[in-house]
Amino acid sequence: MTNKTNCFAVAVYDPANLLEVMIFVSTSENPSCAPSATATVAEGYIMVGGGATIQCDGKGGQMLIESTPQQKNKWSVKSRDCHIERECTITAHAIGIKWRDPTNKPELSTVITSDENNEAEASLSQRVAANGALVGGGAKITEYSGESKYTKFNGRRANMLTSSYPEGVYWKATSVEARHHRRKAKLTTYAIGLNVKTGDVLRPFCPGCQYWPAATATLGLDEI
Image (cartoon, rainbow, N blue to C red):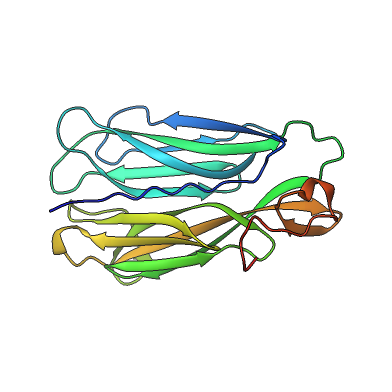
């Protein structure tokens, strides 16, 4: 059996190098069977995406169950072991941008949209907001217990994320239960849209948008 991993990159058009990009990281303090971490972008930066790295010594590892935006300046990640007890650490990565020189530039901001689905195996798409250009997104799983609320994982038969990726103006994610143990779970998907503010109007970030209202293109996306 051959396994394949696909990697996606979302580019922000900036040929004049007007934007400064910085990655902020935070690692969980101690190894754990269910580690979590949150990275925060520095003041003045706009968070446009993020990711996670799981660090385990020796054989085996953990599965990712969350890599999502929290508020507009924090990226949160979580993982957990499955079937076999395994203690690891996890690192959150938050990507921030800002104008190198904000003089006479429109204000940068983001809008985060989300949706959820409650299935043992789920597939979910979240469209970017109409006034934002898709620059990032994420997904998380919350295990379901009982009839009235979502709780933390119980036992080691858990659901896992199998994908989280951009497609056109959507951020998509899928999840699956581990080893055919049917466990209802909540899959939540997030899309991050980058926009510029001129007066009270928010427009999608696009080539030349620092010169609004002259620019009209939208990052090559057809349906913004």
